Figure 1 (spheres, helix red, strand yellow):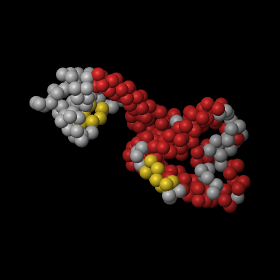
Figure 2: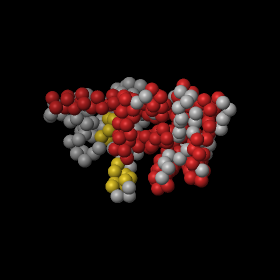
Figure 3: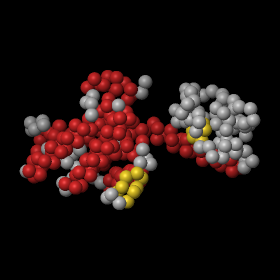
Figure 4: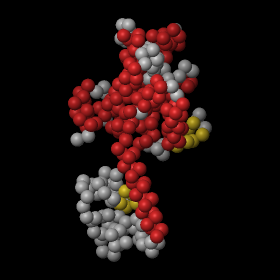
Length: 278
């Protein structure tokens, strides 16, 4: 059982349903308070030295900090956060989504404790939600400023580039804040990213092998033996949940039984050629 599964079972009863809606309403309240009295902003952000001094409400009120001061920018940012957050919540379930937010929050509070005079907002936590959404739905298209359609993967790439810049040239508190903000992302997707990187390396090695043997098919489905020659329009993918190098056609990628330990490659149907024969 993974760490996430254990946390989900242990703390699932404390999960807040529709957490994205709760956080969205909190920011709306915070925006209205600051609009009515700009000095209220000084009472909302998280500062551990003030928490130690008795202002315990800051442990929760920093979620009320609006992500933008301009009404139009705030409305757009809040809509985007609500859209990405509710999608993740529907994809994972409210328990796992709560864990994702909680891990990022605790990591952020840890950095705030190390640097108690540094003011902390919820901006990095909201960005971690965006990065998770972009990872799961990289081809999702949004209209930038309602005019320019752009795939969300490119916005995520710019965000990662910004994070690398901060990690390279930023102050130590800023560097730690970035690391804290991606801690939940790495915990949720780190294994998948590592496996994908290994799969990409394996594909490059097999591509080099194919170039050395141009007379042999490169792709072979482990279930039916289909390859790019017998089915030139078929899409082939490696399964990241199978242990070993198992490739499947589009018809069997989501319907096959995952291999949990290395075993012999299933024999293809008659008339198809396997990788072993290649």
